[in-house]
Image 1 (cartoon, rainbow, N blue to C red):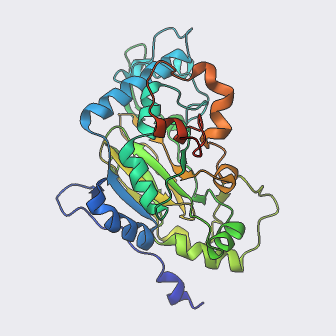
Image 2 (image 1 turned 60 degrees about the horizontal axis):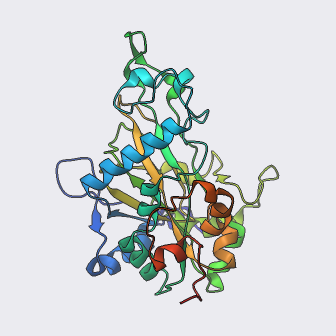
Length: 330
């Protein structure tokens, strides 16, 4: 393809139309499904309004409880509103971007098995009703500017806490696009913002339209020798996608759905507040869905049933989304 033809893949995701930094989003209601799918098809991503302010608050409290439970010997319990408790010696994870284990709080399960989310993904998967959810992690990025430290001093900049992923895709493009040509289901991913993630606060970064370009990429480029299928594929530094990244700020409660073939990353947190998110996606309940996603419910929950919130009255649909019952059971 000519250079101009390749550039035509890349588009800028539209602004919401007000004076803020935020972008166009849709309520997660059935009258918006067609617009959501059309936006996903065009840009490779779409922002959906999912959680209420109260649900965001409940989710943040749940995340904080789970963070504290992983560091019972911490000198001072982690407090998301107090940066004096964010010090490395007090932080429960060595990862700068993610907590180390999957989110097992009851609220995390409520978020990932929501009925409105299930209905939306069912529409995106052409009416498929047999769906599993992922059981993935909370995501935390610490603030890095003007941070109050345990001794009361203020550090103007903590570069070692600042982290961003490189541009990548989470599918194998050399198998993903042939699967789509065979009529198999797309893979969708999602990031749920629990706090406002503006242009400074380390939100989602994407190359809108790159989900179409990556098919061309896979036809022209051979798999790197040092890359292992099943892991994220970093996009080469010389690739044209590096010219078209767009910051995707999210309001609290917004959920960005994106195609598995979309080139994406995150941008670093240059604010004083935390970036708090939950990673959620749904997939058809079949062998392909399970094989594609190492966080699919059937691959995760069995070894963690001792931590599953059994005291909640999960309904029939939720239990099937979690793989606790098969979809064939009535």
